[in-house]
Image (cartoon, rainbow, N blue to C red; front, top):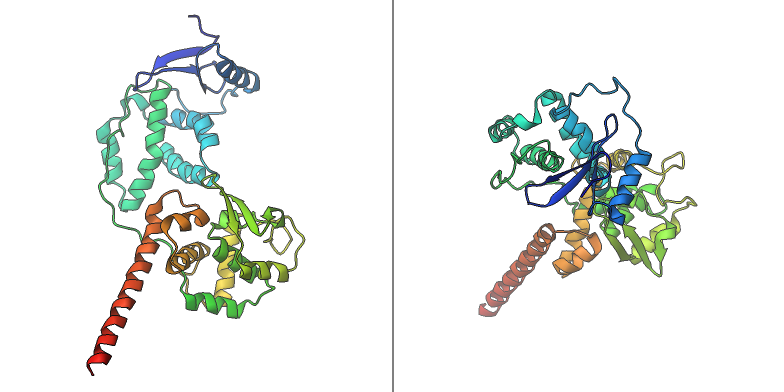
Length: 345
């Protein structure tokens, strides 16, 4: 079957036929479905009509090099539309560094032993994992577009990594200290309430507004996961929102009335914690963990907590429920011993 102009066909490592648009001087594109099908032709038309020619001298990347692969990968729909903005930034940080260090090397000559040596040069275990999570899809993409015959990262395992402590979960004393410093009606107390009573990330909290409140619940579409949640509003949060002046599109705004960026909100909230003389480890994300802890201590199951927090994996949520169950059973055991001791006297 004759293919449309500039379309090249190949078989990937799974034995599936793939099609890729390679037009000289223009960005490449992976095409879905079968040639000449409506899905295929819609993508083909979009790629050929919307593409702009690459200016001569605009890129110093030689074809077939790591730098060229990274540049094409950034334009791939899988990277642009299937990854959350935060994930894209984290992957770019890793891949930009990879391109700077190895950009002139030929992708086809990259062997497994090279990947192993690069990993060995990274000291911190969790940094190794971040690096490999960025490189794996890059190598899979290289196979997909025909720059490699195999994936040198396939089957490569790092083994069990030491468990990261992660963000500090706020204690009840720390929450009370913040509340004492920032009364109801202040922006700081509103920020605490939104974080603590919705169990959401800062990237989601800064986008919340009155238009998201419906019938006693607040609607959230998580930026990181794309999950859509409807979270019943705690009465304390309802009172905090009602007492806080504001007529902006979002509950939380900068001093200039503009929406926060996630980083900007994190810095602003850090200053509010400093004003309350809280430790440096008290951060916005720690309130999400405190919210999960509170739910677990109230007897909620891992699935019930995830229905509010939106966690995709229950492993982290189960950490809170197990801790709460352990504490509950320990208290019951001590109370039982105390009763026995009292009775024997």
